[in-house]
Image (cartoon, rainbow, N blue to C red; front, side):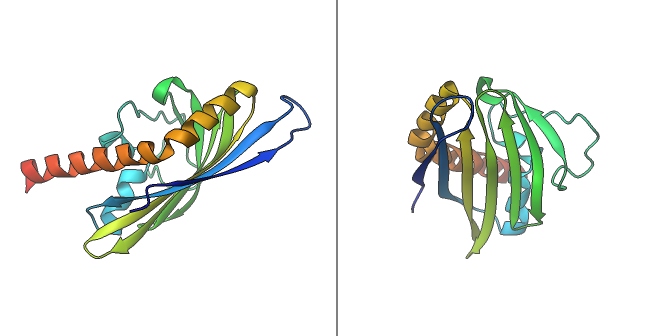
Length: 168
């Protein structure tokens, strides 16, 4: 299984650092649920079930946290970020815009495809560094991206195994 491939595109900014780095990172994981059930795991609230340190805060009530236009904030891994749900196709796709002030901005898209009795989930981060510090962090993230997605798959598998033992 292909866990991730990185493409690097450099761009010059008109202000800020002389070189701004942009990365488009795509990889796939397998989730042992059909797409309609797997979708919830990639919503802001649903990700709390498996992602260590993920605690979204909603500045406004969000009865449906996957609705486009929903805004939330996170402090995962020591980085404060503001997220906006930009697109949703229930059961198959959700996209976010993410800004980590002074570091990075971009999008995250999760596309869920049926694959027998499970789902193949494609995760794409398209990020641009806003500062030299952000560029260094982005390069590190790109290097770790395949392992990062493997950690998602492992955490989701552990959650599903735990749920099966306790509810199945």
